[in-house]
Each structure stands twice: as C-alpha cells, then as structure tokens.
Image 1 (cartoon, rainbow, N blue to C red):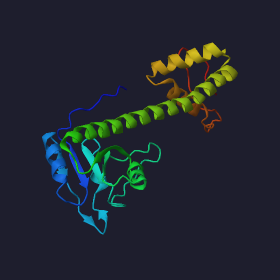
Image 2 (image 1 turned 180 degrees about the vertical axis):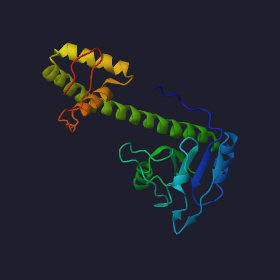
Image 3 (image 1 turned 135 degrees about the horizontal axis):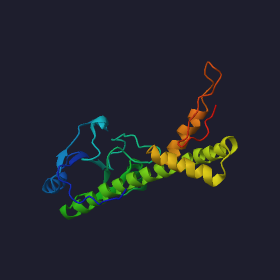
Image 4 (image 1 turned 90 degrees about the horizontal axis):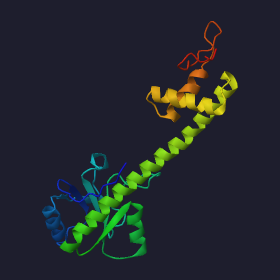
Length: 221
C-alpha cells in the first residue's frame, strides 16, 4: 500500500455548516475555481440538517464553523478516530474549547474566518490528505494486528504437526508454508483453517475428520 497525495479536487462537494453572513462567498468562489461545488445545510434550532448516510468519502468535504457550538453531530470511528469524510474547521473565535470541539469532530485542517482565497487550497490540501493518510495508517495497523493474531495459529499448527505427525519444527513450518502457497492463502489464514478442520468432532463412524497434507503425509483420524 503506497500513499499518494491528492492534489486535484475537481468533482468534490463541500458541505459548509455555517450561518450565511457574506464572508462565505470568498470560500464558495475559490472552491468553484478548484472544481468543488458548495452546499449549505439548513440549521434548525442550532443543529445542521445533514444526512451523514449520504456522505461519500471519496468526494465530500465537511466544513464546520467552530462558532456554532453543537451544530454538527457525527460519529467518529472509535478505533481510528476518523469521521466519515474529511472535516475542515472554520475558525472565528480561537477559544480552546471550540478548537477542541473541532478536533473531536475529526478536523484535520483549519481555515480562519473571514476566509481569504489564497488560504483555501492549502487548507483543502492538508485536510483531505491528512484524512487519507490517517485512514491508510489505520488500515496498515489493522493488517498488522490481524497478522499478529494469525501468528498464534501458525505456532499452534506447527506444534500440532510436531506432536501428532512426528515433524520437527523446521519440517512442520516448511510443510505448512508450502501448503499455504499451494492453496494460494497467506500462512496465517491457512493455519487457522488447518486447525479448524482438525478440531472437527468425530463423525457417526467415530472417526475425526481432518486435513490431509499433500504428498501423502499423515492424516488426523
């Protein structure tokens, strides 16, 4: 997996949560030049009317005005701490509590109000690419964690072949590696399936169904 910076935002959609006051026209005009359309959700009783389920992570960017406390409620993934789409905080009053609220929403970039056109691209670039980078890092960590858990299955499978089939450690590992390659599976997944098949209860004849290794090696019975 190789991370690539996104530099062209054409086709994007900016969902801007703010109270219209005239300053946002600069943001809208600059975004349009970058090929990004702009939408302003209605705010009723202090809450933005946004349909989170309709968000598309590959094109949507959520701009949240930090001066509107509690206007946006979106779920952040508890494991990755990422929102469903990139979030850019619009900062007016630089109060620690408001900045913290934006960070808790998953903001990966900030844009000072009133907005200056020259700052929009940089904010967009940082916000989207930091979001993508964090998402990729989380996926890598998940993959490493799955492999770490899978190594337990490899160790158990090696021990089982040594105890039940008479292999030495090197021979057991080599056999499992070759069979996983033949099955076109990674080592960890193959060993998990190997152990599951050998753990099946006896059939009606009293025999335990097991897994036969290629090459005429021993079968669990």
